[in-house]
Image 1 (cartoon, rainbow, N blue to C red):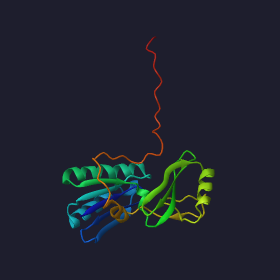
Image 2: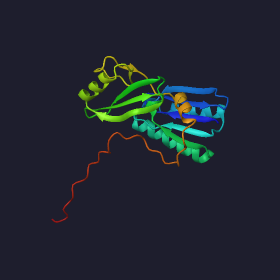
Image 3: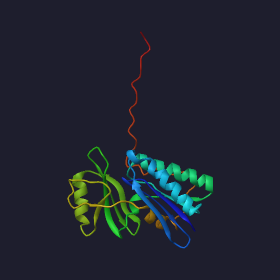
Image 4: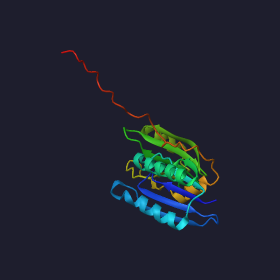
Length: 201
């Protein structure tokens, strides 16, 4: 089975094409707003070299909201056009370590935390404040502590990024979805409701 994997949840984007003989085509590139076109340039190169995939695997985050949605929309479009199976997996499971704790800045003075082993989330991702997060990390001090962004308040942090080739390996045996994929949301959307207007003069 040939597998195409798309990963855009962090500042380092990647695409991988896993052939039937398990050889890989891999591209890595900056995945920020200044380099948004690099994703599609590299995708075109991978497609020309690899052909049509039997399965498409996409990282669902948590991480960059915009990047994750671009990857999901692209995966759905390619699957619809090619008839490929579609799989979505947590991006945080595709870091190339056997076991680790992963964290990220979730804004509003909160962080997300997950504990991953052999490509599976044993815990999380969940939101917590800094004090609770430090307690959680102390409880699992035997595991590497990783993030895909710099967090100066945590000096023992190791930078590590989700990788499309790891995602492809995880997705090869994963069950396909029906085509409806969503990013991993850490909290409900914040919506400001407009104040009612009085039409009486």
